[in-house]
Image (cartoon, rainbow, N blue to C red; front, side, top):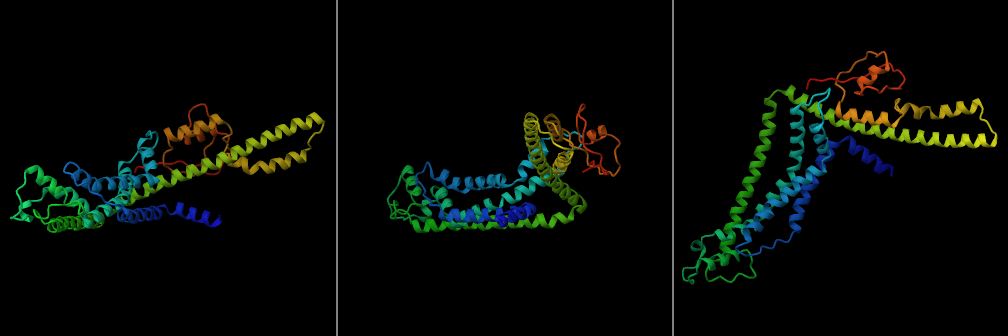
Amino acid sequence: MDKFRMMFQFLQSNQESFMNGICGIMALASAQLYSAFEFNCPCLPEYNYAYGIGILVIPPIWFFLLGFVLNNNVSMLAEEWRRPTGKRRKDPTVLRYMFCSIAQRSLIAPAVWISVTLMDGKSFLCAFSIELDINQFGNSSGRALSDAERVKLLAKIPCKDIFDGHEVISREAATRYLRCISQAFGWFFLLLMTFTAFLVRAIRPCFTQAAFLKTKYWSHYIDIERKMFDETCTEHAKSFAKVCIQQYFESISGEMHSFHGHHSGKTDEEEEDGKHKSEEEKLLGIRAQDDMNKVLWNWHTCKPPLNLKKDQLPNGDSNGKINGLTNGYHSHATPKKEWVAYYSKV
């Protein structure tokens, strides 16, 4: 269990590397899924095109959406986009950077699927077999066909078992021709994707590097802030539950002692105070359900401005304002030497 826990902590601390690994696994899975997929063209004029194009387009869309689902930053992006502005305004460049980062990783598996599908050529052959010119691959001595018979015959070209028009058209020549075109489109697609990636990497340094670093920094800050807030809430919930349970048992124990005529001494109270001291500190002065609800509500509606200060604030009211609390809530936390507020003009 310790090894799994260490591995999980490593993945959490290296989320970018973890997501790159997930995208690589999805790309390999897409190629493996295509090799295991049994392609069966319907060989009917009404369904060939829909089936062939569907195999080429629908799985990449599914892989693209799956990449968004598996990326933990999607919920963070949606939360940042939908949150009220409050004391901290939203920077559209940071949101665009986060979306582009997610989309780039999610496009890897669809690109692999499209490339493998075009290189194989089965879906392209199924979709465009009815568009062939029968005079180009046909036998001049063959029988004359009506338009409906010609379309039905061309639709059967992808199906070797049921094709019965060898005297009219050479199936092998037509198949080779369509697969050659499909592979040409596949290589063109790979070239286009590689060239696009090259342009993105080559053009990026031409723009202001400071603006890019600023955008990257604040996108990382949003991610880290969200994680630390979740960890703090989890730690507070554990301490709140522990103190609540301990106080419950202490009250029951006090009632039982008073009922039996026993009284606890001063030393027992001091031991109990020392025992609960660490848990009390973790509560950060928030000891009521309504107060915690106000903290959570104000964190969403009015996050504190990004401005770090070392000045010690004089009273609890200022502390409440720094934490974005509404009127009527006063913090019971003990005074600290350093107060933190946030402000930024990103």
